[in-house]
Image (cartoon, rainbow, N blue to C red):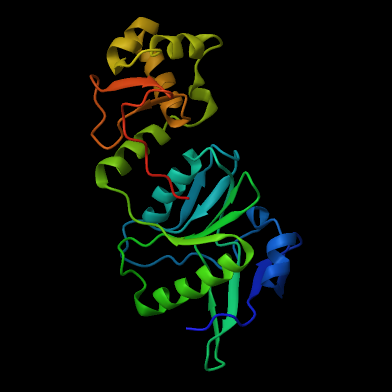
Length: 252
């Protein structure tokens, strides 16, 4: 398919007006991370999980999430140290197909990287989600992003164990779980060499007060462990320089 025709961007400006602008210009000038959603996430009757808000540890702000699959991908991106901002559905792309018909697509997720580039992404619950229309739109949006040095991806669903572990650690992402002043350095020192989770926690103090700090450090990458097996008290935890555990597969 030919996607060399011009793409346009539709977004909501700071005063709440809908604006249409040439895509290449908007990508340079618009802070999509600060834009409200250009269209609402639908609430589908009978679905177990509907639209909601994800509190981002990266920005300290809420991000609209349209599905459980999207929320899980937001968790992955929120832990990525190269990501500095997140938004849900901030831009609609418009283009004409080879037959001259106007087509449009609203990617579910926007992530801004530290180098100023960005990721537009969709979060399907399975590879075929959305059908042929979604796959054709993915080709177009990928071409639009490639033209300006950005990336588009249909993010692969996480393994169930990895997703469960991230959900657990995400419960400790807020700064309130960093512990009382002076406790974090003690915790990091306790795991300066890889050791079982419970042993390091007991070395640092009362596990009841220490474990939330360990989980906070694991979320923020100050400590590391194997997240592709179920978390348990004997799981080895170590410093970020430790090469033992497999790293979480981040969305990039």
